[in-house]
Image (cartoon, rainbow, N blue to C red; front, side):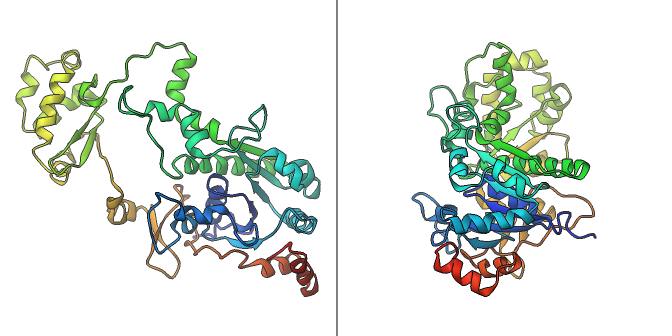
Length: 401
């Protein structure tokens, strides 16, 4: 198997929290050398996420383990001219520069594309924002909970019905899909560079990705479609694309889109072949017209057995269904383990979540534990050509830690 696809690629991760740094993490999974640039002292504020109220308690910094893996840390104060000079030297030799500073902050810190591009014609400059880089909200801070989840309509759309409160998102739920889009933008620019020899500026944002996630219904609205009432599951219009609770309290969801062929198989698996010939449900229009009645029947049937038993019964019969998973399922999920969705850290038995793409014949790096703040500062500076006296001077100026 060949070395990682991005072996030798130098990436500066000058970003915070999740979406932008996670794109750098994916690059690192395929062998890129990623330097995490973070403020001295406190570091990336994302390091502190598990300490916030409401987050799970753990002896491990699970947030940083996930996003910080494989990277080296340089603690650099970009508010100081000396720190900006170091950054410019690194950017002159880098392949990719990643930031999620708002445009106004980039300008203040000397980190704009206009400033860095002349230093390195091959540099791919990748910027990520909450709401895009134009318009009155260009400098507005955004997290996935507001710019992705709420702004896009997703927060409103996924609630059980129009009478329940809008649904809250979970940490990183929008950031990680955004990271994959951002990664795609970076790789597209690298492909362009292969063809032209020149770098470019690529960008993405939380708002755009949120609307993309909601785009089927967003496009319907753009086409002037008429929307019906949002109905709770007990009043769903189709009983065989609905979710049901099992005896043990777990849920499964049926997704029988090829209903004419799959309905008899479902009835057989449920031990209710009589439903196939029942004149109330004999045809697809009949089943849809009496969906509430059929849901009540299926509710009673599914409540009679545990989820594990229903999985055995339904599997292998051409029926499309899914388990409504819970976090307790994940560590022992055999399908996830067999497909390297979960992989161990190097020299450890602790598992982490793998990036969700694979390329045949290309080696992915076994995840390495993330760095402490500034753990590699001296090492990185030496590689950039700074001698020991210069490093001491940078430290005394407070530009490096």
